[in-house]
Image (cartoon, rainbow, N blue to C red; front, side, top):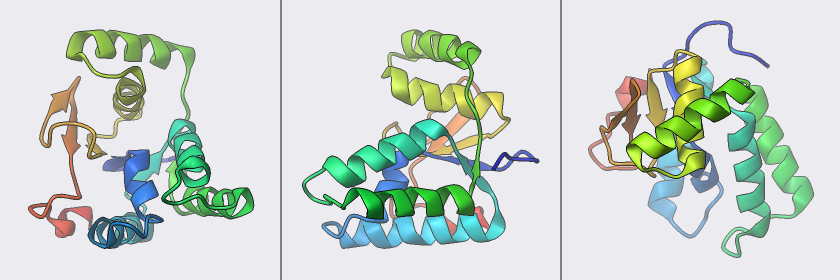
Length: 153
């Protein structure tokens, strides 16, 4: 599925993964609430990178260790519930530039480049400093107690 309008949020895989992580009940509850709200309102997107990272984490992390068929069902559900936006070679080059400029991991920079390209102003992730602005994309950590869930509606 491809986004037809610019949504408000781009979800990092860590938010999706926490929805399946029974070890941290508080983060799991928050992640489920986030997924529910953005899916209901169609206000968030993910990329193939996020789906792939989620699948790997669900099947290879000992704390989750989900069977591959269950993990596939999970990421297919996410892909049906949210829009999936594409990536291009040009986005890879932009991510390389962002990674160098902001001294961040390439895969995190790729999320920012993809969000920026698709006009998504906010990246929901716990992997950056909350409130950080990267090439015009604001990073918000929705797992912090101070996060306002009403902003998702």
